[in-house]
Image (cartoon, rainbow, N blue to C red; front, side):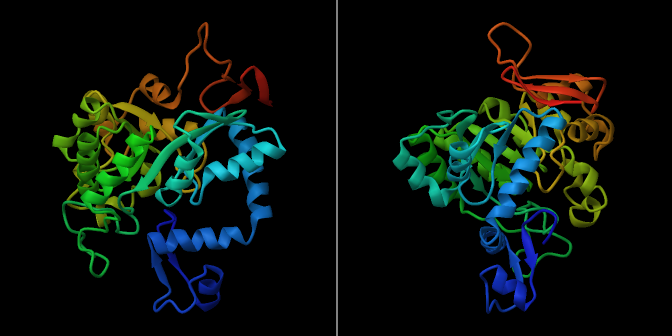
Amino acid sequence: MSRDLHSLWCNTPALDQAGAAGHPTGFLVEEEAFAGIRHIMSQYLDLVEHAVQAAELEAASRGLVGIVDFSSGWAVEAWQRRAASRSIGLRVEAATYPERLDDLIAMGAETGDELAENLRVGPLKIIADGSMGSRTAHCIAPYPNPLPGYPNGKPNHTRSELLALLGRAREARLRAAVHAIGDAACHDVLDAFEISGTRGSVEHAQCVAPADLPRFARLKLIASIQPAHQLEDVGVVDRVWPEAKGRAYPMLDLLRAGARLAFGSDAPVSALDPWKAIEAACHRPYRADQALTPLAALRASTRTTLGVGQPADLVLTAGPGKVLMTMLGGRITFSR
């Protein structure tokens, strides 16, 4: 499995495990890979649930009080099942992919609706292109060593398909979270948001054409980025994106253009660790001229403030990454 989860290399027994027996090459990319991962995980649900509970505890130990879950499959259904049997240790916004959009609409649920304690309906998640590491991110410039048949990467939806999905999201009162890593994908996604009038976020925004930077603020879209990817990608960008590296990871450019930044981890691709993201954004950016101040990084990592009327979601630290206590709605979820 590639680190970015966008491709799988399978031998014959692994193809059976992934539900792809008889595949001609054993190399699965994009939706084939996602379907294979879902199929494998469905055979080990007890292990998955054990891992989820362990991740909740680990998240609290790092000062996390909430997540947006973009798990492949239907996160809404999975978290409803968990909430029926136990207390959830994080605030969860559970996303829905297009293949389950009809099910969500049938529930009559909108983004932000409360389904159970600490569980709310999240956005419609759309994956517009692939990833840099798998050479499937849709880019303006061609790849030096592209996948056969995909010189500029692999868009997963046509522009009309993107527009139709975002239009359905708006009609259903759903926000949309659209994965766009390459600059060509980002441009098409911004166009679809603008035409449809849908609100939401561009997930990753790892490569953005300069002309598209101010559109985030104008369209009131969140730039949802994962700074820790820069630590892992630093040795790859020059080789895979030689023509686009000057547009890669434009954190400060987005901020200066008025965009609202929201940090995340993209776990399990990167560790579920907000301090690692802050360190990367402030001290180890891919491009030195894109470093953020600690205050800007903290603002991108939080959703509430200390004040009357705010939820008592508090983190007590003895310095960056040294979490002493985490509190969720006034309840201690971690204490050292």
